[in-house]
Image (cartoon, rainbow, N blue to C red; front, top):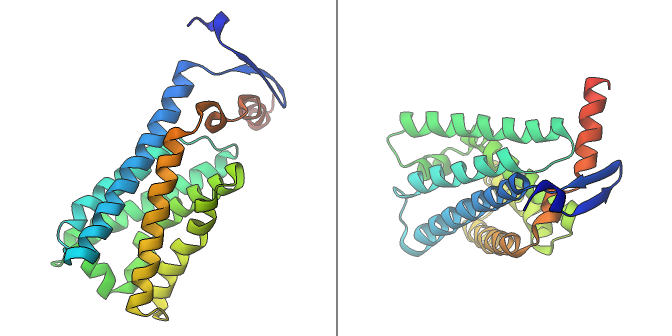
Length: 211
């Protein structure tokens, strides 16, 4: 499809078209989410079903990679917020890498026994929560309205020790189920809404450049 054949959309600050590169970025964004969700779900099943912990380290690495790809390609109007979420992911990734190299225990087990480590690796999940919040605001998705409070509730609850083991398991299962639902629904969603109003991006960029 040539540029002249592309549908023209009316945005808040002018007309715009959606290119093949735009569509590819959305597909990559969703692929990252699916990778993260499936890795997380596999880890949850292995942990709760068989008590496996060693395999969680590579699964977490895959989860983090998928999340990083999604944060690289997500469309967020406010550039500072976009950079903030990417910064959160980077901090969490570095922290998890340091912990994985230094600990003699599997990463998940070490974090569970040392909740204070969530001050570092927790930034990864803060970035994920940011995506959930963005999707809840932009698309009014029911599952993301649950995920946005569930993720910090579980992590903070474990850090301060006010959640029982059974309650942590329940919240982890809720997180996993809704994460999978979210990723699957994103895969089936029309692409243009994920791209958003490109005229807003142009307008914000012009403001930053003083044009």
